[in-house]
Picture (tube, rainbow, N blue to C red):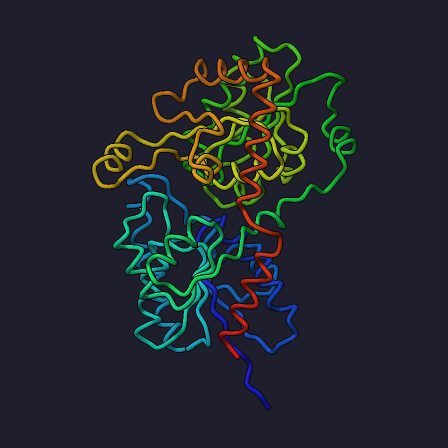
Length: 387
């Protein structure tokens, strides 16, 4: 009798769990005898993966928060590296989270375990020498962006362009009419969605300014309806980000915002405009061709560190990075104010030509994500490695 093939998957924070969930389902669907274990979030666990740690709260956005989590992450790394040695999986699959996963990738190479890296280290400002080091360490690279494919191909990696899984993940649950009915949207209302981010520190930084922006816009756009979609995973991780906290911040800024849970794609699909914290959500909105502005703010200490220690890219929003031009307005740090953001939103909403141009550019962004079927391609790469 053939032994079960062992696959260990390590996915960091919420976005890794988002991409890992359909991958686990696809692997199980193969019908092969597989033991799938590793690190992920609630989605991957629900798909059937044995999880050693829940990584949905592992994301950090600044130096102080990162330093606070270092002892725990060092312990988790030590523990999982010991499990890696004991289990000796047929393949180690790594999803995003490069600071943790590249260390584990090097450990796997020492142990002779083949690795596949999905969403590999490829920050748009990533140092070429670092990419070359990653290319030498990783057995196979599954590139979700053409840019990622190009830099790894140039570095000599064994890489395949698989496309982006958001093309298959981003789907509405209901028809437009059903969504509007559920939201109790009035006739002629302009729906403006506000996304404060998925990490707890992002929400703490961005929620107040988004609420203030909604209050400003409410006085300028009499037909506007403001809706804030939040994920249940964001408000259920013991971080203090509760619905009560969110509503308290909104009310303290004098804003009128409806908070809806687990309706992000539905809400984005009917939004006339969206104000989005930089991250995966900007690409999700692009997939739905939702006009937007992108905002982001970190502590002054983190900003100073980033400017001194890293080479910052020209853009920070994913749609702009993908096309390497300003498809969507971006506001960062001192420009993240209610006045600046609301003025930009009003200007765009008052120009049907600018909105149409932005939607056309977003179509180009989506086209650059490849073809639907990324998850299946990655699954096939993994299964080929364990044959």
